[in-house]
Image (cartoon, rainbow, N blue to C red; front, side):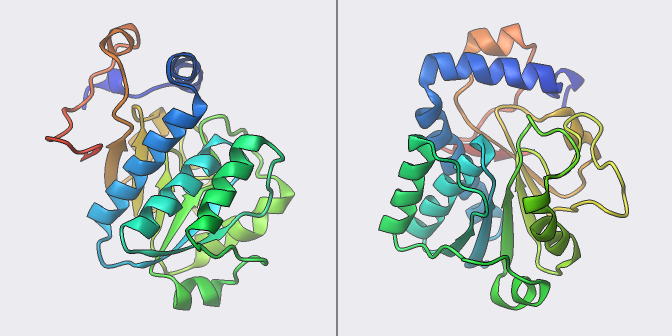
Length: 227
């Protein structure tokens, strides 16, 4: 892919703000989360027992939407949501997951459980607004995810990575098997080696031009494409 296709943190934030103006956060999140579920269904068709680890921001919102669609795709998702913001948007997304009978874990899963109960763990903790260090309430789950043998799929940014410079400590960072970039890959995707998908088929031509994006064509009616 062309180097222009990688967004810096400031560009990712600016592009998202423009998209929010046009579409609204709920609509974007729905499309982003659906594209993540579609990419997972393509990349991990057999991994039906999925844990989605949800953070407090928009990345977590994408994860909640993704969980709901995975359930509709015949998966058996469960959710760990350690810090729930008191915003109507996230409360509604949580209620939707409950309506689809997706269980929420009450305690942080230990490494043994991550290895034995789940065939895939989806990392929807932090997005491109992340600034190190990882806050206290997320260190245990991230640490367990780093040391589990179950494959991990990160949404947009592998949690704990620098958005532009990638893993801050190669020996002590999340190493996802799959990354789903949303809108366009962020600079840290250059340090990712694994199954890489692009999701979020909602970038208007004017924004493609403005941000000098060189995006692949999405096949047919697909809302995700493998890079």
